[in-house]
Length: 143
Image 1 (cartoon, rainbow, N blue to C red):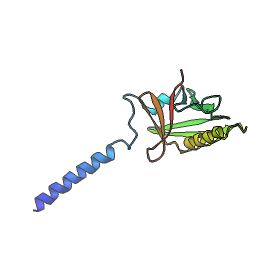
Image 2: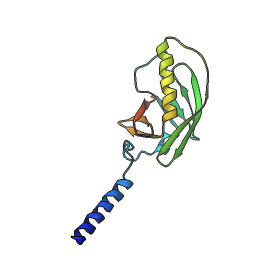
Image 3: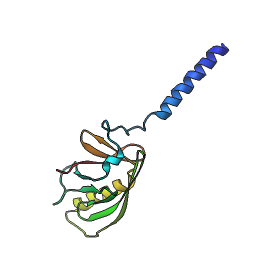
């Protein structure tokens, strides 16, 4: 009986250890892709066009980012540490645009950039993920 308890405890420790080493839920990406691949990349919103210009995200080789949020342009910096990604907005223009849907899209994008804690690439799309691994925005490569 004592030996069986020890074996069960050992098995439980191995399973828990393996679970701790597994990737975070939602963090898997296309084979070979890492967050470092975000550097020097250019993306546009994978959803339908709202307004006259697509929402975009451009990341330079030095980690500086810029883009179009639907109405206004924004700038900032991408912080990459291992698998963690933070998009830190530094500033933006402050125009008001019509229709209201454009401003709503912009507000959602700015919120998504602020919530981003990881990213992955899946079927060619860049997925920005929040702390829980949930997708907060989808981009496709700019042609």
